[in-house]
Every structure is written in C-alpha cells, then in structure tokens.
Length: 232
Ligand SMILES: [Zn+2]
Image 1 (cartoon, rainbow, N blue to C red):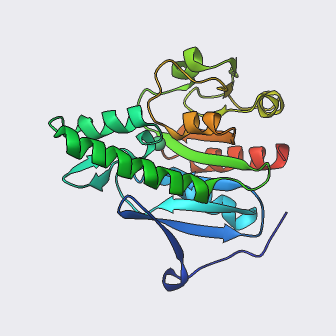
Image 2: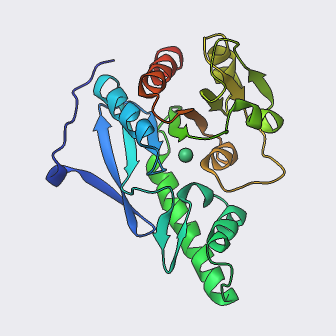
C-alpha cells in the first residue's frame, strides 16, 4: 500500500500538454489508479489529493491553472465541459457567442483531438479507477444529481454538499454501505454537458467524482482514503 513517495522538484516534474496549458503529473508507485484535478480554482481538492498521494499509490494529474476556466484562443473555456462535442460547443460559445462557423468547427476538431490524447493519458491501467476531485462553494449538492442518477444513498449525518458520484454498479454497492453520500450514474443523461463523468461511461471506465465543500480538506482526504481502502 505504501510506495516510495515521489517528491519531484519543480525542475524535475513531468507535465502533460493540453489545450495550451499543462497538467503536472505526480506518480507514486505502480497502482493502476489515476486521479485528476481539473478546476484550478478548487484549491481544497488539490491539497486533499496531494495529501492522498503522500500516503497511497496512484498517478495524479494536476491542472496548472488558477481559475475554473482556461484560456483558449481569444476566449476562455471550462476544461470539464470538453469531453463531448456538444459540451465543447456550448463551452466555446458561453464566453464568445459569435464564432464564425469554420473557426468553430476547427476549434471543435482540435479540442476533440486534445481530449482523445488526455483520455489516453489518464485512463487507468487494467481495471483501475479514475478519480476526479472537485469542490463546491455555493448551493450545489447531492440532491441536484438525483434525477441524473440510477441509485442514490444519502446519509442523514452527512452534509449534502459532500458526496461521491460513481459510474460502476458494484462500486456503488460497496460505497453505499459506508458513511458517505453516494450516487450511481451509469447511464448517459438526455443532455450530455461534456463533463468527464459521461465520457467515462461511454468508455466503460470505473470513474468516481469526490466532491466536497471548498475548505473541507480533511473531509475530502477522508473520503479519498475510504474509497482507496474499500475499492480494488
Ligand atoms: Zn469542479
């Protein structure tokens, strides 16, 4: 369980290029599990994941960006809305509605290729897990996911803003017997917003989103540890 921790100095760090920005790669041991922190403003999730990688094996991808959105050409886009063409279309038009059609299509093609490369890099080996970490700071909570879920397990003692989304039914059965809120999403929704979770379903990847309130680093670390110790 405890591998040699790789404390890379900045000059030795490995990076993955994506849409003109970078992900910093932190690797601890040879676990098939992969982790991703994709929203640069969700600092608690980054710290919780760094804590986790100090203790447990896996390979993590940390976005090198301070905001939720990343710069893209003359606009900005949400990097967790590009995992479908429809999602990419809407995120491209959100902050720049007036694209010329040819430039828009070229951008969509480029984003698609970058997405394929990123998936290749973050896809777990064997039957490992892909775990993303997110934070919320307003009203978003587990009840907003109910209609998109095939099963839910909401605990009375837990804050509804701290929860797990998983895409594997067997993982859900195991996790729902624990103390945390968890929902199963293993079917594509009517409206695919381009987030990584739907792409994971399409690609049959065991995916988890560990979502907590911004600032609740210990809670997020504990949920990560719970997942680590109960799923294999
Ligand atoms: Zn997020």
